[in-house]
Image 1 (tube, rainbow, N blue to C red):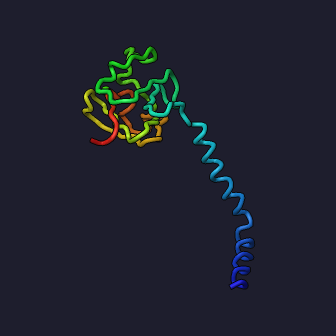
Image 2 (tube, rainbow, N blue to C red):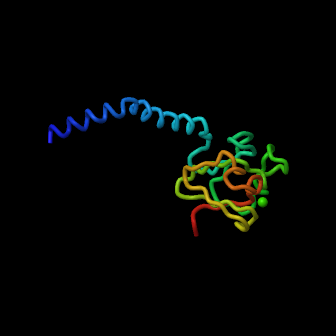
Image 3 (cartoon, helix red, strand yellow):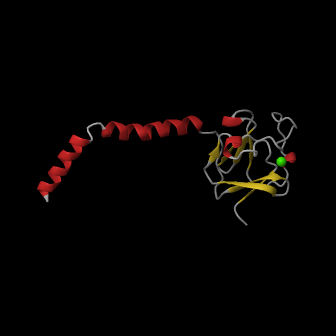
Length: 140
Ligand SMILES: [Ca+2]
């Protein structure tokens, strides 16, 4: 067994002399990209922004909201969050959040898992940018 083990090590060194560099580089690159895109959003909240890449004045909710017209925002064209969100982050404590194109949890629906985020809704789901009008948490 000992002899076989030495043979394996020798083969690995010979065949993969540059492998350790590649193995180290891959996780480092992924970590850097994730950190650069990390949005600022408090625990327990669903956060959203009027522009892609978490830009503009951040909005937040912690519960279900059947009508985003009731969520004011000076940074949205209509003065409220209806049809305004372009990026999202789910920092809820329990579950997935469901997002709806229309009021009262109707119309096109898309879900965002807990601790997940979307830097650009238009790239995430074409046609869903600037269209969210209600949200609720967990599947019921
Ligand atoms: Ca809408």
